Amino acid sequence: MSLRVPALLAFAALCAAPIADAATARSNTPMRVGVNVVPAASQCSNNPGPFISLEGTITLGGLNARLRFSNNMKGTHVRSEDIVTNVELVSDEPIRFAKQPPEGGVGGNPYIWLVFNDCNGVDGQAFFLGRCVQGLSVVNADLLVAALANLTITSGDCENSPGPYIRLEGELALGGACAQLVFTNNARFTHVHAEDVTVGVTLIPAGQAIQFAKQPPEGGVGGNPHIYLQFTTGDGTPIGSEVYLGRCVQLSR
Image (cartoon, rainbow, N blue to C red; front, side):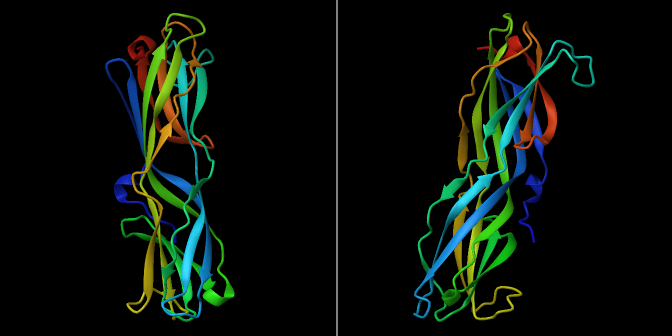
């Protein structure tokens, strides 16, 4: 069972709007993340144990921006004289989450499960970690996390060749990813029972922001071209539709 995303976030949307001396672009879409969780157990035979700790990494799927510079607005596709450049906004470098403090279980040697959720009560995939005295399994999972990217685009040197030079900056706000440890003496685990013990764990706090470092200038086609932007995933898959930002002089500071 895959982690579900609230209905309002279950689609990709892209919009852009000019402001006084720049343009802004926004992408509201679920982002695929890879989660690696390494559990450890102690005091398996003691009450109120066992005590479980979790640590690991989260790898974001990556986010890029594709800029297209064109001196012709009539074409329905990218023309040979257009220039397309890709800028990496969020890399796929792993983010380490802090080792969670140990939490007491039901005592004895229960079955231990890890259930991912969206931090708003919507459960996703469940993984059996094992029983305390047997050692616990490492979990590798792919989740969908809501993500809101806000980008500011500015330009300079619109009249010079090989300009214009475009700069991007902004941030990516993540919707959060949580999990629940379930300690149960029922091996079947068709659902959580009232007598089971559950412990919540936060992997990504809702609203955690990742800043886009101000990108170095990207050269265009010279003159005062029309500029378009499209967000893409780390592997180049488009997110939403390409949007028109304006001409270079409209974005200059």
